[in-house]
Length: 82
Ligand SMILES: CC(C)(COP(=O)(O)OP(=O)(O)OC[C@H]1O[C@@H](n2cnc3c(N)ncnc32)[C@H](O)[C@@H]1OP(=O)(O)O)[C@@H](O)C(=O)NCCC(=O)NCCS
Image 1: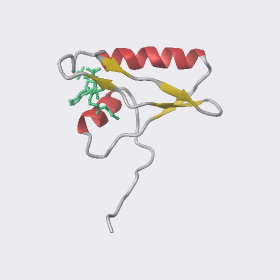
Image 2: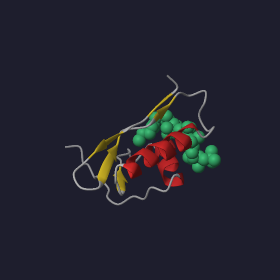
Image 3: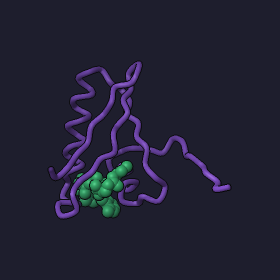
Image 4: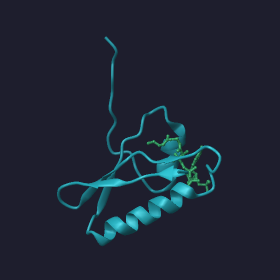
């Protein structure tokens, strides 16, 4: 295994993307870019119009990747330790 991703179909025309992972050695070679493009192709064929994913605020690698692939932040989760 060098990389992993996938999505769950939700009600309506949306899907939820599982966390993507690419092993360290082959990173920054376009593996996730290619896998995400294939995933989008499969989802479009199923009539899906929208894909959501969750990423931790401190995961700069993840955030940069999804941003580069066209994802926009639409909501932020806030937390306070008590
Ligand atoms: C996030 C992850 C899946 C990216 O996979 P990848 O195959 O290395 O990504 P790609 O090579 O397809 O990168 C696509 C674009 O994303 C951006 N990007 C990817 N990694 C980046 C980094 N470390 N810093 C800045 N931008 C980055 C770049 O714009 C890149 O395009 P470019 O290389 O032409 O500049 C991989 O780094 C990973 O598995 N990280 C650990 C797990 C993780 O955090 N997953 C996300 C959880 S939400």
